[in-house]
Length: 227
Length: 298
View 1 (cartoon, rainbow over the protein chains, first blue to last red):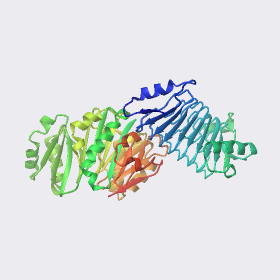
View 2: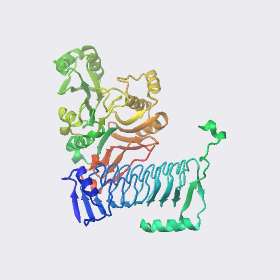
View 3: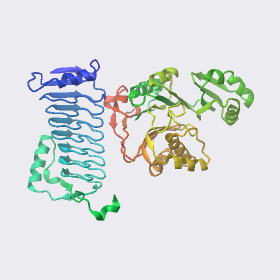
View 4: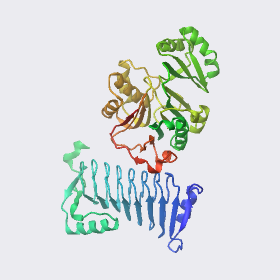
């Protein structure tokens, strides 16, 4: 286990050290201590390493992640795991706004609550939130799965494309063009796998599925006055 | 972008350290607002005096002999404590209005930053660490305080454009965001007899809350109605003589983190601002909900 102390190591050095660990690295386990809410911790990683951050982080932690497994033993500020490509990011506490935004792949697990705009414009990432999510989550989400064990805030899935949204609790309101859909066997399979991988104690049958009504895909002249 | 910090102490034993804790938090928020900084601090109400925090662009001239001149003009005892470009005048409550009138006539270059039983406001253009040093903010004591680091968007970088804004006795407000209906609201408030010092949008928010409280609302009710009447982006932190409030607009894109322990309630634009507070590891830390009013009173 390699330890980096952010009380004595500058952020750029932390990130360049972690970014230098590629597929063939022998140093696969890293821990970061004294993050003290710093921004952009463990960004741009591209190797099969495990990074544990002991404490809460600021903006944009674990952004653009590829392959790496990042575990934040604390809460994360805005934009955690933004634009993730692959790998796993696990947050033991809460996540602030736009967690997992624009992510293309990989798995983001938030064990507490996520606030507004969780999974905004997600493009293939899987996100599992053990608690609640805030308003405007999955806005313009294009693909991937967003699983919420708690409740969802206002305007869930507004202007949604083809991402699948699974919510166990209450949804305060659905956004434009987002509707409840039937849960088919293949969806239960997807959910079962994601819940297992996220260490979530819930049954797939307890969830409802939401998706796009696909009414906004094409321009409808009858709606012209609404634009 | 701007930075906000706030501390509301529940444990009196921390009161001697209020200034140093807030200053540390304020300096951490420098990169959110490097162009000006300010702090409002609420001390103890130990007498029946009114405190006026005043500011001058030319303190050598304006503050020269001011204590004596004002005492003679208002025919009462005025004491003055100078801190760099600011000074705190103390006068008995019943003579406070006379002193303000005399001040406006005798030294028109002086601006009143705050007035009340306990509030003092210090704000200037410059890096937060320099502003803190100029006013010895770390040495100040009190029961609650609010600080702001400014990155200006809606009006000029001037001392009067810095936060906190105080528009009523012992009241202050700091703002991260921008309001879009501040001009129309300012016109309405002017018709209600409220005077404005600047073209700043945040001053309008402060005046709006003052107006509500003048009409009988408590801090919580005033903040609640701001959600209906103010349009734009905002995270506000507001202080009164014995209260401390927080509200975010319904979109809530301006960041906010709060922490509460048995000893204090703390606010930071980012968690970074809170990391050195005592017992933060065990504190309840949360993000205030959109369109939800939080307030505490002593």
